[in-house]
Length: 303
Image 1 (cartoon, one colour):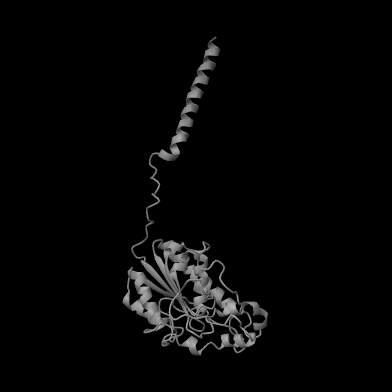
Image 2 (tube, one colour):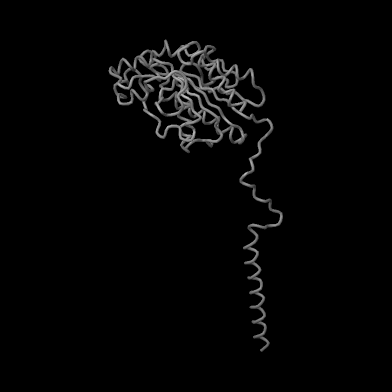
């Protein structure tokens, strides 16, 4: 009898202990003593006071940058068109705005310069470097917003990154991008992004020449004409402006390319209209492209 009572008492104690454990498990995940409350979804992540409110990223065109250039004080090409945009912003804003210029090889192997890096390689290098800067800044300063602007090959790079971000495949959230300016974008597609300035009827050279990739390789080896960007700019469509000078064959190429080799040669020799955005009065009536972009970026910064 005594042995039976001992067994019963032991069972009762085990049941009490088990009930206590179950109760603790059901409540501890939400109410552990000393555990901080979960942050509200409306709370903004904190960041150091040294972080800029906005980072402006400038992507120069072909032959206007270098892989080892200083992104905060670019010197690779003093005649770079993008300097006419980035320098006024650096001069006006300090502390709360960081102006960062993409350092990349910025070359375009062609029939006249076989020793240069190919367009595909240069573009990929620029894309990786720019995305690396976005990742770095967003990790250190999660509340910092971005404005991105690019010219020519730089516009293709910035446009491709905007495409990824806007369609949900980018390295930063779309809501962190205040605006994107693409000047002479080789993948410009009518109806994608916001066309500003005087209207043009053509398309980007990479779209016009895509069906003729094999034919243009003798002129521009290693330059893949990739056509339009799948998905466009997605969430960034309303924030992305496309700027193209009439008759600039980089962004205003005829849809019916006709002589593919001649068009490829025009791509190589892109000068004339393509080189005159800083002075061309036929892009924005009453002002120049660089001044328009500077004012547009100021509006995004000042809110």
